Image 1 (spheres, rainbow, N blue to C red):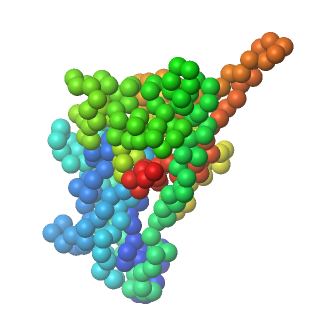
Image 2: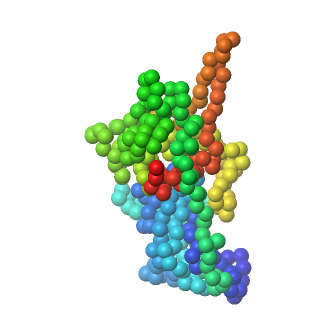
Image 3: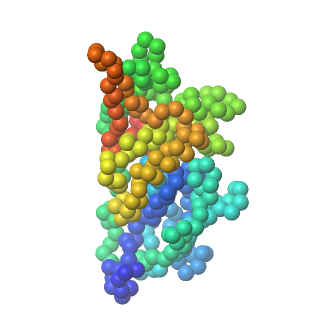
Length: 297
């Protein structure tokens, strides 16, 4: 534990959350309470109900406590590895099961006796933007997602509340119309991506828009590999990891360019000017927070 167990401040807070970072994007249907075991002494002595929350952008799975851990107790965490179809356990979005690696999948931690838990002991949450439509400014104009002579690209209008509500909220993305039925948004499709809504309120991990943003690493990386969870650290090659996983997303179900697309403007003297309207990491995270909050308009 790194400190003497006799010390009352040794260990984690009673309301400590469990944070796990992965090198792959998870299959959302496996990011559930049953994918980890938390117990003290015996698997029959469990902990209070854990509430999972998947941060898709950072590939971090957070289990928040709904109660308090026992002060001074020693707990064990075991991350479940599925061995057969239908087993509980974590899988990547393409179905690949969690594999053993350098980080142990079973480890212990002790709960401190004092001081009492506080809100400071809980992992942070991104604030919900006051004006979510402002986040989509880079996706508008030209032949992108606003009303124009030929209508918004792919039928997606992000220029107004009415446009977002009518073309994005709980509406199946055109590139996700790969199932046997059209126009039917799916919560847990047999294959991730089939029937996926553009925006699934409260479910950024089931929102096609977020995966389109992931296809552009520039939306997440300001060059510093910044993270909302500094205690977890990040990979030394975080940008390369995002590029690699973005390519896997493209091969699996996120076709076409990432959002927002590069813009090519003709110059009067010939040639073109290339503009990169990538979102800032803060804006991208704000979009995820807005969707998780229910995508209020």
